[in-house]
Amino acid sequence: MISVSGMRGIVGKDLTPELVARHAAALGAWARASGKPAVVLGRDARTSGPMFARAATAGLMSVGVDVIDVGVAPTPTVQLAVEHHHAGAGLILTASHNPIEWNALKLVGPDGIFLDGADGTAVRALAESGPPRTGWDGIGGVREDRDAIERHLVQVLALPMIDLAAIRARRFPVALDCVRGAGGTTMPQLLERLGCVVHAINTETDGRFPRAPEPVPENLGDLSRLVRQSGAAVGFAVDPDVDRLALVDETGSPIGEDYTLALAVRAVLQHSAVPRSHRATEPSVVANLSTSLVVEDAARMGGARFVRAPVGEANVARTIRDEGAIIGGEGNGGVILPSLHIGRDAPVGVALILHLLATSGQSVSSLVGGQPRYRIVKAKAPRGNDLAPVYARLQTRFAGAVADTRDGLRLAWSDRWVHVRPSGTEPIVRFIAEAPTEADAQALVAACHELFSS
Image (cartoon, rainbow, N blue to C red; front, top):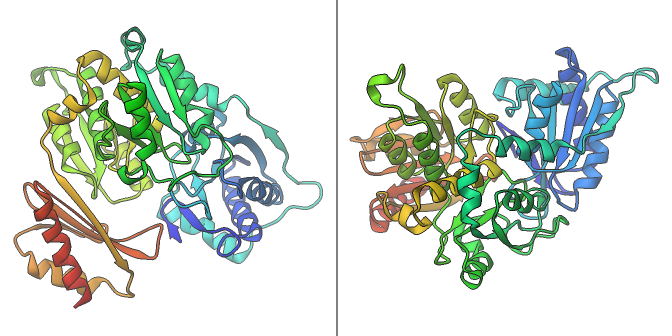
């Protein structure tokens, strides 16, 4: 599977050491051609990670590129390390939320943002044609960077919109689930430095996920129980590479990943509040086309302009950069704070949520209850060869909707929307609908299914 942020597959079937070495060499050759012959390499905790890291290292060295190895680390840590070292690129070995049998290559540009379509295509072309290899006297070297995680934590704690004193004064009891991924290297330490009393599960970094790794409500039963048993003020769950953050409220109820970004938006806009008459420009917030209206509501309630981008972190990141947005992200729990770096960052999300809890004096459930509520329904179907006829039938059926065709087809009304698009990570088509009631959202998805199969 190839998407704007890289490629992924099943270990030993689609993804092999030979494939990883060839594509790593291609990325290295691309970086070297730009005049920056160094690539930062990091990975999540998957069992296939050490094998693929060695293959990637060999590939990078073979084209005369130096490897800066940060080891097992969150994806945002690697992105920050690319910027710190002024490297030509970054390579992250992680399949994010995919099941344990998957792994992937995520390709990062020198700006710390995942490669866009054009650069990604250029790297793939090099891999297919065969990247230029160096001789015995030009082989790249390897050096370790074991300070990358510490730098990341220090930068999060130094964010000007985080009131550390207020957070530490609350001594929040917090529950944490790292799903035995890379989060164990980072999340407990961050919470402890924020003065929290941490009750944690699955902090081992052996990649043997005890549950389905995606931090969606149906996978957070153990965290919900831990919240109730420990009396935690909030529960945090991250995915294996720590770029997505999900929340469980103080009653033990998962609240949905879209609220992660909505609450983070509220925290940032609260800090940045300036009377409209004194603003030079209206602040903007960016989210993708499949993100809930709760994020749009949070942006507008905070006096910000709301902009949507195609799905995919690279697309959202570049829109944030181009718009000069104050915050953005994706409804899957991915918070992007450009004042730190333009990448999804669960540690940043944790700090912003705790800041909002500390400064508002409200609980998670009351913060959520104070916002308009919607229901999201998601479904999928096997991907066909040509989706254009499906899109045409949908636009005819819903002629009164506002259509956005930048990424599949999104049809929107004032209080609801439906998005039909091919997945970038699986061979399926996704249907996502949101409306004030579950019945209304189900009706939109049912109509899409009907027209998809007709």
